[in-house]
Image (cartoon, rainbow, N blue to C red; front, side, top):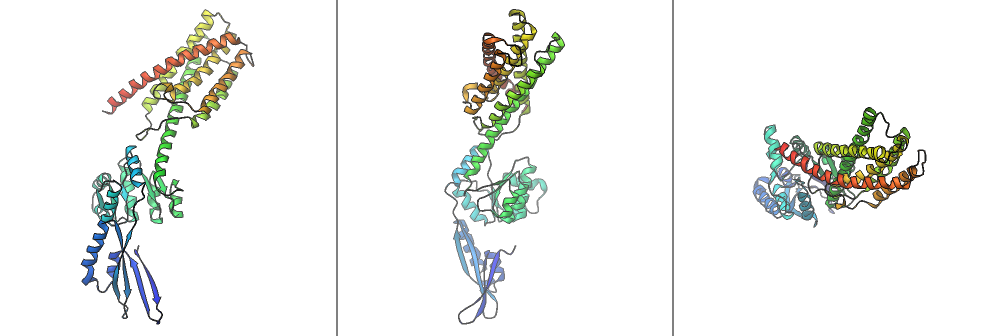
Length: 424
């Protein structure tokens, strides 16, 4: 990289000469008068940099074809008005922000001060001639780096990843493409080149970085939905399979028919799809999978579901004295209703009413369970059980739903407490 541009000019009198502008140190290296003015130029460049101004050196050739340093052009590129607020929000959400720029170190420090970022900004030369461990520690501790080249950006991303950080990087130029590709999340800003866009995972279409905060919030909402879905599916698998297996092995009784299993699966599809639109609260801290808690909560809810299923089996056979032919639709309705109510349990960390469900999710569950109820009441594809028994199943499932919600909260307290002890 030459860090300068050059043009050949011919004036009105026919005199030809060349002009060049670029990084002051590069322009100085061309100039024949550099020894006489170098100290003064460097002092002025540093003075401007401390005020946040970028400096361009300008030179032209004389009649003998020698380059002469002509002067300095100061440029001021202030940070966007929303930059400080965006960075503050990111840090409040557990995202550590580092500045990586090709500007002079003094400019970087002044810019960092203006946006309330840490001013421990180091020159890229500090990365040279250090051991691998020392470099990683330096990169992790710094607030940013200045005067960087593309290889430095790549090295910074690589060092942070080696320290087990999830790294996101923004960039706009061709030189940013390798680092954007290397980062866990490469973000090409609104004015990015095609090379940067193709290397990035996310391409911003609006100016500024505040939209990244929206992306972080939305990603954490998606994670919450995935987390609740995983708990629901594991709990449902334990609840249905364990209950069916134990019923067959212990009582030599098939609690539901193959057709009923198909109906369970079909009526599950619509509510499951609407989980993607559910209302959730995003976390204020970075998310990660905690399989000990997920499996623990799902297992507890699954076992509670098995107990409740055997409870209604006992009621149907021992108290209501139903034949096993009619017990099957009786149990089917319970599995269907209670299964979908489990969605309301797993979707929140606190009480089920702490976050209002999305209308589409609520509508999907109500509609599918009305279909399941009508099927067993009027005996569509199975023996009818009537409205009285159907309403009893609903009351039983709702009672267990309240119990399961308390069980879930108690299980969270137990497993999250153990998680803290485990990490200690």
